[in-house]
Amino acid sequence: MNWQKTKDSSFGYTKGVPLTVTVRDHVVAVAEEFVSLGSLILSSVQSTHDINRRSAIAHAAMQSLDNQIWRLRVSTSTKLKLYNMCILPIFLYGSDCWAISRTDAQKINTFDHWCLRYECC
Image (cartoon, rainbow, N blue to C red; front, side, top):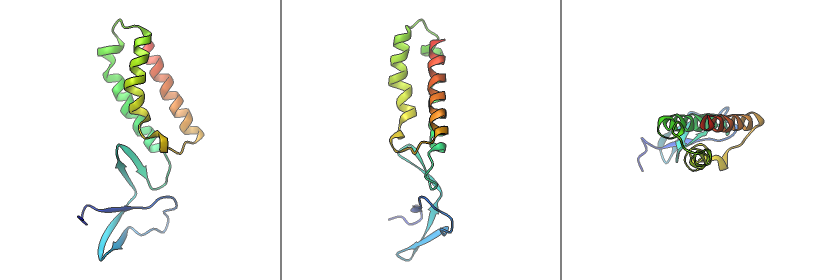
């Protein structure tokens, strides 16, 4: 095990948690946030930051398809299928473990409506 690259994480209540932990006589840093398999994991267990991050990534993907797909004379049903196959998986990756508040649900709906307006215009 490479102890220089190893970090520990604490979830939930983090006040009073030390910045380092000793494991088998090795000092290991405690990480506040890290990216695991493309999802942003925070010690506060809130999903707002990951939702914003995934939204920005999907937003960039949507705009990168602007000249190639959305502005061509492609039918709306084809654009909708492309949106469901290409953009939504980018945005919803890791969403099964999000803890969603009302504000987060509103952000998700806002992003979805923006995408649908963007592709149809």
